[in-house]
Amino acid sequence: MTTDPQTVAWLDQQDANLAQLVRAHRWAVQYVGEGDEPDEPPFGYTVGLFGLGHPELALVGLGPDSTHSLLGRVAEMIGDGRDLVPGELLTWPDWPGIRVVVEELPNPGEVVLVANRFYERPAEYSVPAYQLTWALPDHCFPWEGSGPGAPEVQPRPGMWRA
Image (cartoon, rainbow, N blue to C red):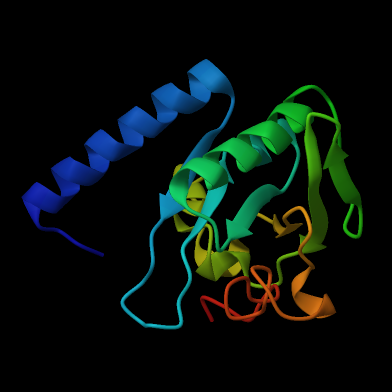
């Protein structure tokens, strides 16, 4: 645990900002750019869905705008009362060709760090999370072959941040 006063003050400010966002919108999106390791893809996840009685959502391999847009769209469905189920396929009429499969995230304590901090939960008792695995129009899911959804771009649940 960090006791550096400057770090503690910064974390307190971040916590207050996040709490304000979640109160206003019921959830927020935490985006994490590419990591220090060359094989670590960018990802994002929600904070606040656990408070609505639903697992948080993680999304790997997209830029910040696409990550916020897609997570926001699915979080809005959950906020409106929809419960996602692992294995479910999501599509949208106004986003033709974009497909998303809901999958269990087996290692949420290594991924949704800010959500666990928000809910004051240690990693070993992490909030649950689903990974949203995506396929763009005319492209495949990671388990179907190569392309933008390939495993190096979008690793399988539990195979990244381990």
